[in-house]
Length: 179
Image (cartoon, rainbow, N blue to C red; front, side, top):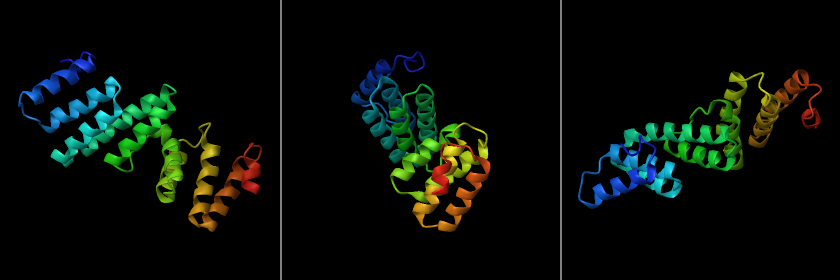
């Protein structure tokens, strides 16, 4: 009831009290505990509760990941990029390959930073397929070509750079493609 009413700290208190009094600690309760901690602003406590939930029942992994994905997207929409990125990383630790929709480019950047080129390529490719006319499509195409280049697939990189030049001849990024 406390969680549904938006009283997240109170929900944390009630769950803690329940556990302290010897109450059953089910995966549902741990999932709610994680959600409550996250909404109350404690990401570390939330992560711990989510991990305990998954340890108790591995089938909760996708539910946790989807909740965290939604939190990531909401944060990014609210221009809280740092939190959005943290939530993305946490979400994919519970289930890889999550679709972040219009924010797949952000997920790709995270994987490029980790030098996980195949995963970044997957995110960028999906973004370009789903949002070919988006304002970020030109940048995504350059990033995709760069990811192929960094991976060592020069042929795919050159092909994408050429495609970029044809599609965006007046782009401020055109010199990157020519280079």
